[in-house]
Image 1 (spheres, rainbow, N blue to C red):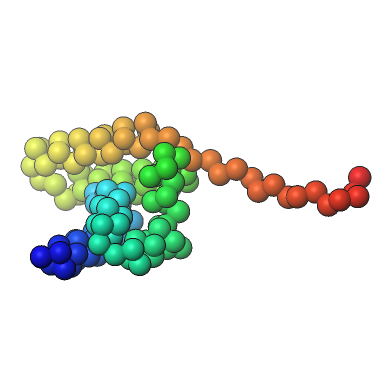
Image 2 (cartoon, helix red, strand yellow):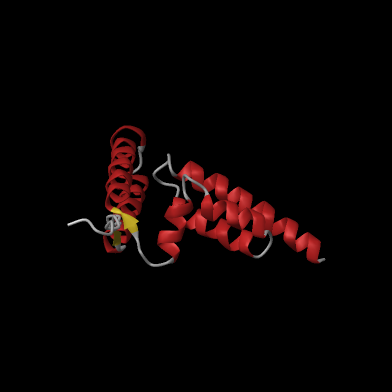
Length: 136
């Protein structure tokens, strides 16, 4: 039973990683939620996959910053909002035919924008260069 639980958590975590990666390119798909879900699943099923996720060069730092309460870099916030409003704006104008679908898309955009605006902005500290002894 324990092995089945582990396999289910690894499978769910892997699907969540896949959806999180898709979310990096599709504005309506939330990246953070899926990557945090993957971290949860991997932490309870596979230390190796959990470590891989947190040290991954593409989204490891992103997950660590979010989980540790540091927030999201301003550049990522701006890029996310530009992509979000661009895709939703196009969808509202050119794709969605019904008023309720347009309203729903706009509500999603407003909700995500509000969430990102309230999310702490991460500003990395500049690296300190150690002083050499004897230099003036």
